[in-house]
Length: 261
Image 1 (cartoon, rainbow, N blue to C red):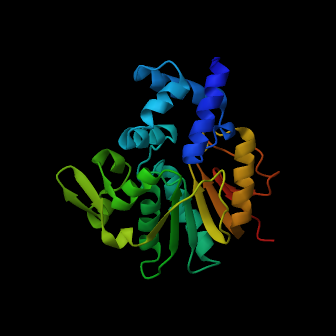
Image 2 (tube, rainbow, N blue to C red):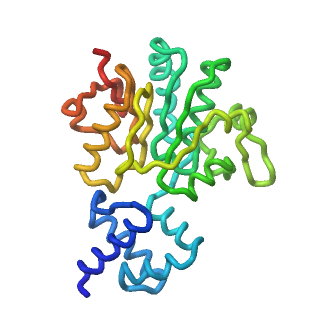
């Protein structure tokens, strides 16, 4: 079997098992990433490694977590979250007292919980909707548990740590008050239908290995999912260079707005 045949067989097996379509990801980066992992476990082929790892539930869950790059922390890139709190959300609140927010590719839950803390600060007596979705079921389970290490809280101010976490040994657990603000759900950004009517969508550090075509389709789908005046917030290395072509205007760097009219 050639390397190309091996890769095609691996992609087919993965898609059948998980619905992850690697044709929508940049092939060289994903091939290198997966082959490095396979070789660390003593395998020289993609499909050989897949056949082994799929036999153990925990090993397979760890593989999918590695594949979908679940790295996150609270208030990741604090300067951008500061802009979210001081500029973006207050602007959205001028048009709607209750916001419909989506954390797309929420990973371990740090992002939606950060959002919930911001909303508690800005509008303590209002219940907003925060939808948090991810492809990885195991990661969603971790997000629902809401338990973190101090390293994942390194960008958070001390007042919020004290107010919204209980500490047991080295574990920081999100309070029930904050947990209750989040609606977690499995969702495949590259395959499933999108809800509509969002005031704010966050999709940060998710598209790093997507093809340009997949990115454009994703950002077009987000555009449809936003209300007029709604805002898409992307990661600090993910500026949308063709945002005007997709219909957006620039609210601020890394914040893209669907025009009001």
